[in-house]
Image 1: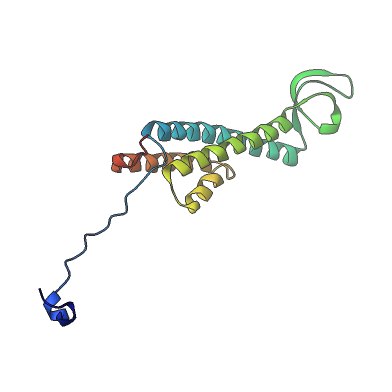
Image 2: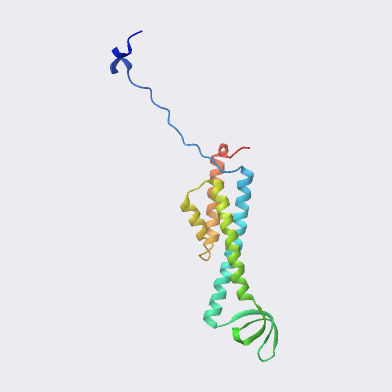
Length: 168
């Protein structure tokens, strides 16, 4: 055996090439969990989108025509009604449906954000995608397009990397 101090670089030769390290794709759940998250995301995005469109319509009626939608009430002149568009001060009793649309959309948006976070964390996507998903519930009609694109991307990644699911 040669003395280690006598070995030169020429004696060692070229190092073998390193195998390319492929970064493995990993998901944060099983296929079943991810598909469940996709279903919840789809459901909440459609509900949020529909209520956002109702909210836009309600804003147009409220600020464009100074009317709000009331149900089951009475006007200040004593006329009873089941459903109608009235000026806010003209109604003595009744349920303000316009206000209910605001409240329901707000809570649905909270559920939508939770569904976005659940799918995003299971797919282990970047932060920009979470912001894009969250923006879908704020811009009218956008939630329908974002939902379709996100689900298509999630399905493609699940099909491309079937080995990447978390196994228990």
